[in-house]
Image 1 (spheres, rainbow, N blue to C red):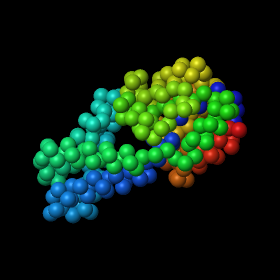
Image 2: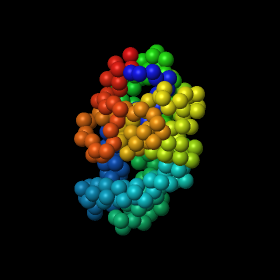
Image 3: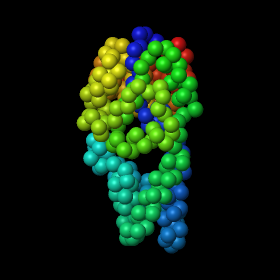
Length: 238
């Protein structure tokens, strides 16, 4: 890897594995069926998937800006799902939202290659910053739960700094904290539209972490490097 004083790292999908989130969704849906046995699980799962997708499209900007945080987002999201299922019970909504957060936390963990990669990166002399979109309480709680603290030098959350990826301002803020410059930095992330585009907007070289080997659905967006794992990136960094 060319000169690298600073490594900026996405959080969700890059350091944190969300592959098991469907298990948390299913467990929460099962709680709905237990409360209303006349509903079948497949129906609840279908309504949940459609509602979550539609709701995220509406609330994504507020989430990234920090205007809405946990647990308010969970109450709104699951409240909408219950309404669509014709369930109107505030006490149950509160219990269901707690169930969702408990299950989501239980199924959230770092990828297996994260800790070794962070050690190799710091051994190579790079300073590290996590750059993540979302509200501060939710994103920092994730880090605390899974134990990603060292050797991270800075954590930059969109809801705290007033800009979200792909806005170059959030990347520049991270570089300021690391006392680095775009020409000496790389950004690593799993999303083409926020991570790769955002890094390019900020004049930073990008690494697309494409763990699943997905096809590039944005042909005009070309990362400076593509890897399948952080272990592969660590080999290159060394």
